[in-house]
Structure formats: structure tokens, C-alpha cells
Length: 499
Image 1 (tube, helix red, strand yellow):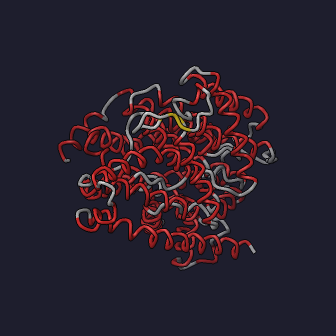
Image 2 (image 1 turned 30 degrees about the horizontal axis):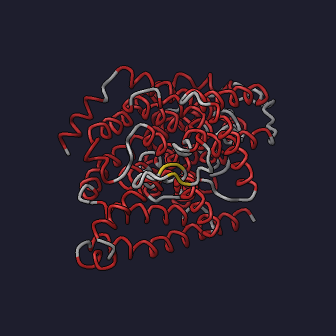
Image 3 (image 1 turned 90 degrees about the vertical axis):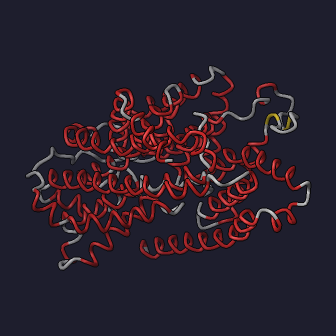
């Protein structure tokens, strides 16, 4: 495995990889700095670009959007108290107060440096964490793989919201959609309803763009943002002594964000709030928080960006995405022929480590682009949504069409887009459906292989020969129940906090 890492390290040192990562960071910051336009929308709309690139170029491009988008949300949060992303909600507490105090430049600098430190540190942890987990999962065969995939679906359903029944309904729908087309084992057509266009199955790209991007577009259309009070960036730059004073807080928030990133379903919002609360509780002057304390900005931004790297640990090793953004990343890996899971490191280990190495190098580009372009992104805040929405819709349709050049994909896009809007209005999470669709085919294939190996006696086979599979199956309901209770507790705290 260390040979694969060495090969991957040198594979990542490509000019086109760095160019596309830079482009991803720029577009991510651009979208994140627009109030109402989320990182999720940027990932979904620009996903098709990665399909026309090599994996070592296309995936880092998406990771750049991921990193840049999470930080970009801090710009409107600081300047106009409108978080560009949910991850920047905690940044508004002190960031906008600093703007009112004439310290917007200092707040933006702290947000940038804290974000980069948290992101870089968690990326290094991710690579170190990947090694032992990847070595363990490489020992798995079809029975263990089937059990892991089943556990992944249970975990995703349990962490998709406070209502597990809705998660299970959406998961079942996704599994059913994965069965549309030709049976991979028997070659029999299923659920095609006589339509030739469905023989090859439901296309992944129109589904991803439809259910993730369209609800975001509708949400932006329904909001009104007043950016008339945006002023130019003023005040002194951040001094090294101020960064040094906040360094302990940044390290604490980085640890918090890294830990939360490993757990599916929590994400940047929870990390930022926990990092901010921990910093306030540990401060000698907690009364300053909320009134323009630069340490508050550092705590929130280090925590939410530290989530980015560790979300790839369960994604790459077990195929479990931590949130909607990593669900899109999973779709990108699958479309590139890199199906996350036990076989990924055995078959494509060098490429995976090349992507992870590129992710670490991206932080250097992050520093340069962010530092130079903050004034530009600050002006972007004032652009009206009415000028941007038509372009976003155009990119959505163009991206869905160019991949297969099939007009049917446009109908699929509209259908899944309408479904995504209705699902959001009814408070149904779409991620369980997407994950059921993506994981359905490999689960069916692995389960078919397991049944052939067990000759129909699955229980006896698990007890006598595959104790690892049995242990995973026994642990699955316990883990699912624990995570569901944890998510319900987090939801209750949010409700109590807003009351």
C-alpha cells in the first residue's frame, strides 16, 4: 500500500491537476460568496465537467469546489450577515459585528487562515486514517462487501433526518430505481415498461442534478436578499499576533471538525456551532463573543472546514457519504469507474492516493487564490440573483445533455427536479434515495455472489465460514439505532436553541 501511496504522490504532481483544482477553488468561492447559492448547487451543476476529465483531474476539480464553497460562504456572512452556506451560520455571530466595527478585512483574513489551517490539518489526518481502514477492508470478500453495503444503507437512512420512516421510504425508492434496466446477473429486463430508453437503466447525472440542484434554484428564487448596505472592505489586515492568540482555539475547532467529519450525517453546520460554543466556553472573556470577537470567526471557520477531509474516510473505504455534497462526490467516483468500497484500494489504490495527495496540495492554492481574490468575491455579493439564475438553469440542462447527448436525459432532469422540489416541500431527504440508487447495483451483485457461495444456506454459511459478515450484520441495527438517536438529539437541540 505504501508503494501505491508513493505512486499516487507523483501522479498528483501534474500541471492540469493543479489548474483544474485552482478552477474548482475559484468557482467554489464564487458560488459560496453569493447569498442563497450553496456549495451543493455548485457541485451538482459543475459535476458534468469532471466526467470529461481523467479521475486524477476531475475529482480534484470537484474537491476544489467543495473546499472553496465552504470558505466562500463566510464572505457574505461577514459582510452582510447572510451566510452563503449553512456552514457559515456561526461565522455571522462575530464576523458581521466586526464589519460594523470597521474590521471587515481582519475578519475575512481570519476566516481564510483558520479555514486553511483546519482544512490542511484534517486532510493530513484523512490520509493517515485511510491506511489502516483501507488495509482492513481489502481483506473483505463478496459476503463482507454485501454486509457493508447493507450497513451503509441503514446508516444513511438513520442519519438522513429525525424521521427514519421517511428515510427508509426514500431509500426503498432509490433501490427500486437501481433495479430498472437489465439484471446484471441474469440479463433480464426489469421495470422498463417496454421503453427502449430504460433498458440501460436510469441515468445517474440527470438524477443528481435534478434532485440536488433544482430545489436549491427554487429556494433562491423564493428568497429576497438586501445587499444594498454592502460596503467595501475596510480596516487593517490580520496581524500575526492576533492569529497566534487564536491558535489554540483554531486547533481545538480543527479537532472538533475532524471528529465530526468522520461521522456520517452531521456535517459542517454542527461542527461550526460546536467549535464556536467550545471557544466561547473556554474563553476568559466570553462576553466579547457576538460583539466582534475575532476568535469567534476563527473557531467557526476552522471547525466547518476541518470537516471536508475526514468525510472522505467513510466515503472511500465503505462507500458511506457524510452528507449531500459527498453523495455527489460518490456519484462522480462511480461515473469515473472508481466505485468506493473494499475493492477500490486494491484495484485503483494509486489513483485514490493521488487524489488525496492533490487534496492536500489544494490548500496551498487555496491560500493564494483566497488571499488575492477576497476583494473580488466581496463585490460578487452585490450581484442580483435574477442575473444568475438563468445561467445556472442553462448549465443544468447543458450538463445533463452533453454527457450522453440523449434528449431523454432532459426529460429525466425535469422529472427528478420536480420530484426534488416536492420532496423538499414535504420534508423528505433525497440523499437516501440517491444512495439507494448508487449502492443498489453493487449490493445486488455482491448478494448474488454470496448466495451462490452459500448454496442457499445463508445463515449457516455466515455462522460457520463468514463470522466477519455475521458480525457486521449483527452490528448494523445497533449502529443504525444509535446514529438515529444521535441525529434526533441534535435536531431537538436545534429546535430548543431557536425557541
